[in-house]
Amino acid sequence: MSASPTAIENTSTSQQELLVQREENGVVIVQLNRPQATNALSLSLQAALSQTFQQLGSDDSVRCIVLTGGEKVFAAGGDIKSMDSCGPIEIMKRHTERVWAPIEKCPKPIIAAVCGYAFGGGAELAMHCDIIIAGKGASFAQPEIRIGIMPGIGGTQRLVRAVGKFQAMRILLTGKPVSAEEAYAMGLVSLVCEDDQVIPEAMKMAKLIAHMPPLAVEQIKEVVIAGMDASLDAATVHQLNQWLQAHAGTYKRVNEEPPEDRITRSAWFERKHRKIEPATWKLASVKSAANCAACHTGADQGQFDEHNLRMPVGLDARSRRAWNDWER
Image 1 (tube, rainbow, N blue to C red):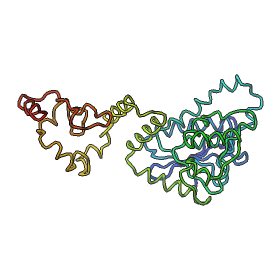
Image 2: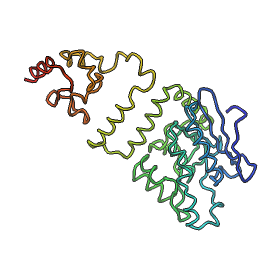
Image 3: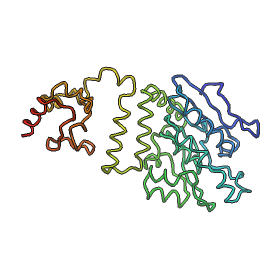
Image 4: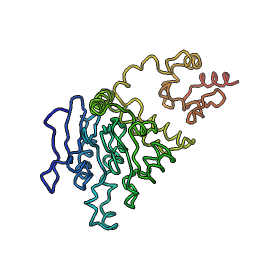
């Protein structure tokens, strides 16, 4: 990484616990900076992360974020010392979920570049990201059970989603670490590389993502995360279809002449719709050849056969007669 990162200072000490560095093309590097404590997530560091991700999430110039602990360790978990004198009520009043919400809800893609330990809260922090790149020497663990507590930043839910119930239960109930290779095989890690290549690989991927259409990137992240728990019943499909219709075509590249490979330009589509008058596509009830639901009653469920059709509103008398003749 290049020099001169911006430091976010701990409000209670002069220690710079979080470093923020802006690269070219909208890539931002966020580095945990508590090497003397193996990047343990102190309350002040958590607050700095929350503040930083809230700022980056609303910054239009930011296209992708790389989150790292440096080349030695990602984060060894929560700072136990900060909990020594705390009872359960005080811990509850801290509302940890609010502190971590800006990371969870950040609309920008986040790549975790993991070297060394990612234990406890460190593993949960990595799981808040969208992509995890790990060095061969990295390891992941949820050791909370060994001190009589459970993961407190959503690790139980995110781990199950990533690796499935049975692997998650093994990790959560034994507290034993898994290697980067094993985590990759489980589906927890996106890419494994040499330890000294973790940050370069993360930057390479971040720059690639940063060159993609930004609105499309944010929409993909939003829909993927929203769909992680969604079942594909008819109601959900209908809801997703409404969302796509409301948001499709909003990026300037899509507003230009559609590419020739769109389904509405295909030979199959033109053959199936050759009897449709051009004026029909301009009706207020249709608006576009891509609005399949205007005529296909089963479009919300992916059914486009010729037996479940309805006449679009606004057809003139001649077109209605032609429609009725065609149905016969």
